[in-house]
Length: 171
Image (tube, rainbow, N blue to C red; front, side, top):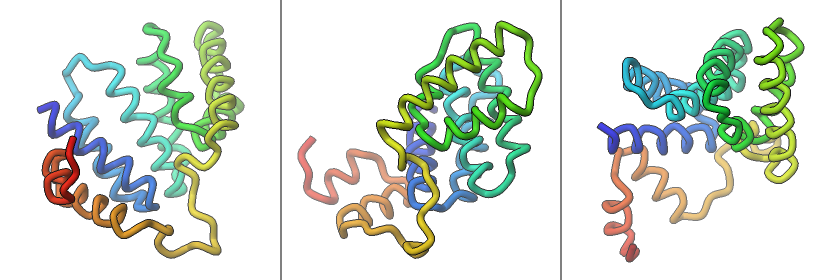
């Protein structure tokens, strides 16, 4: 169900944003299972890239590289570049490290250079996206009461409409 996948995607991104990497990885794995046998290559590649970031943040570079490899294989025939770039600095660093550690055929190497450069450019615009929290703020990030309330409602699986109603926001 697309609605269920949207909720899971938002939850996974929320978990990444607040440092709950294991929860994010579990949601992402659920999303990947949902796309098996389904023809949604852009979604699958996007989930794989979020999964690669979650794996890297949990200290599993080998798994991160495996997910990047699969995402590259999916993205290459369609020329998907932006999904890599939109992930920011963490993806740029992963792609750069992956590029140094693998031996790909020339067309794929050229594509990897292109997506790495795009991720580098985007990371300059938004360097903190998916970045691990700084040690001095090792606790919960500084969120407003409303932001915390929204994250809790997302964690409970509530839809945007339900959240808007509960917070008395008109869409």
